[in-house]
Length: 92
Image 1 (spheres, rainbow, N blue to C red):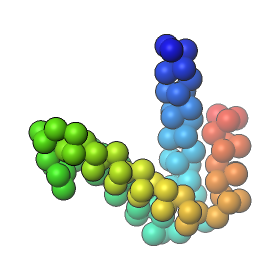
Image 2 (image 1 turned 30 degrees about the horizontal axis):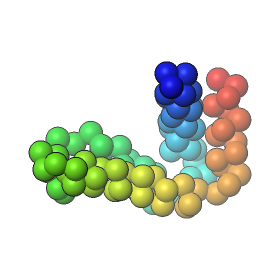
Image 3 (image 1 turned 120 degrees about the horizontal axis):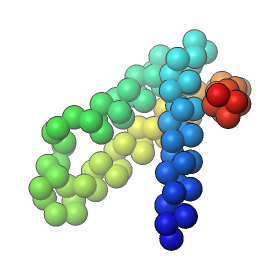
Image 4 (image 1 turned 180 degrees about the vertical axis):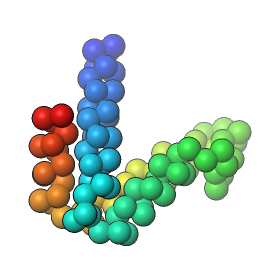
């Protein structure tokens, strides 16, 4: 169980590197950069659409909105850009 969590954390760290490289890439559309920034900002802001003190539903909005923003942004980024960013993240 601990090994799975450790692997998941490593994968997440690798994906964050890829996203950071994609945001810095000039071939990435501005709308995708905006959506990725919005996802990070929403995750870090102290207020939410639905307050976190409400049981279950307060955290559910974070679990839905942030992945939806990231997914939408990734669909806007050309496959070639993401492939290049994955290669650069693996070599760095």
